[in-house]
Length: 221
Length: 365
Image 1: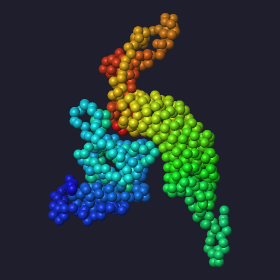
Image 2 (image 1 turned 180 degrees about the horizontal axis):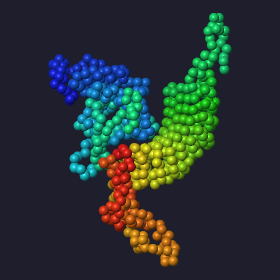
Image 3 (image 1 turned 90 degrees about the vertical axis):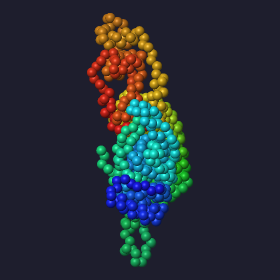
Image 4 (image 1 turned 120 degrees about the vertical axis):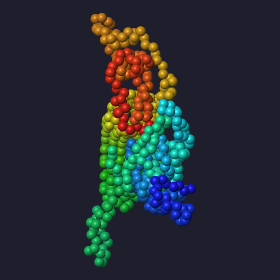
């Protein structure tokens, strides 16, 4: 399955048409088993070289990437009050690769993914992903508890995928003694999303920020 | 310290004995972690160490240790001792002689109420202790005498009751009590003046003590996975950045159970006296009535000048945060009829907007 990214101009559309004529799957020649974080990033750049993105390929390499703690060390930054988002690569604006660090019992709010693909790989510890259905639109003042679609456990490199057509989710580290770490890929990147109140279904825009970029802490607001 | 090298032709001039000593003392860390060790004694620990007095950091985590050598106290400069993820059932008494120990990590072992030495509090300089993932059923009482503690992690144990002695821990910044079976938070928790992070998630809590509002350095409060129906209104005064409330019954059940005891004639009369500021003194009424009148509590409705005595209406007021989430706060009102729009006597002040601006960011379930 390929998908064409938006925001292309006439030049790019012409290029795309040319490439389409040459080959259908532009990732066929690429490795499916990245042996390092750097190789994963290289493969992602290759996969995103044109505006045709093979999402199945992306899912495959995220799944097969194993990695080790030494590679992730610059991005492993835990905070006692909230989980941290640490940008690994900004993907030329086509994707964002980041590492999230969840200290004991930390969790996210229920959120959407602003029309992007979201891949989440658990590389340390255990995470619980709870998927929710979109609240039915009953108008401004209705308050209906949100409906849980599923609850799954993620660990040992397992990759979860979500986009807005599937639903919303909350991610949390259920452990009171162990930290958890996830590798996230967003296609395309987004800086805002909606967060939801579980009891009422009410929603609000949230600005999404990075705790660190390339291993360096971002200045706090 | 210098050990004489066997003399070898051509080498005596090349070796600098001081360098050899430095090479041995190069590291102040002993790391035998992740080795599946069942036991390790002092000689094994110091096999490649020239001077144990230089060792500041010992990593023995992720083994299968059942005990720690009692000769641990020979490492007098030890600052950090990492023993997490083992099978320790007991700590040697000698551990209390580590006068420089600041960080002690013991998570995921098999420690219980009898595992810590009775005089464990002799470790007066201890700042961080992690006892998470063990088998404590009681909160270790020695902790209350360790007044230099900054971080205490007791997650995932089996604690049901917290002693009301937390006021001694005035330097503590992080208190992690998640994943126990605690039914009540004692008042003294509100006197931990340095507390920044308080984690109470995954317990059996229904309320918080009012003293919680005293914690003016508190930035993060985790209350998720409990039995909270509502929160004390004083929580508004906290300058929180993070608050987690998911998986609590919150309000719905509470509202259904609300009852209102109709006030006695005595109370109604007293309310009228207070509201209309009728003068009274010990010449006109009995002393016991004067004490009763003086015990009046103000109605929490900011627009109401009314008071109540025994009979109050527990109201849930939803406070709107960040324009979206509704936080249910318990309010004691003088009667069910007392609302912002119709009150005993109107005032012009409106405090509810101030409450909204007090919270910066709320992570609500």
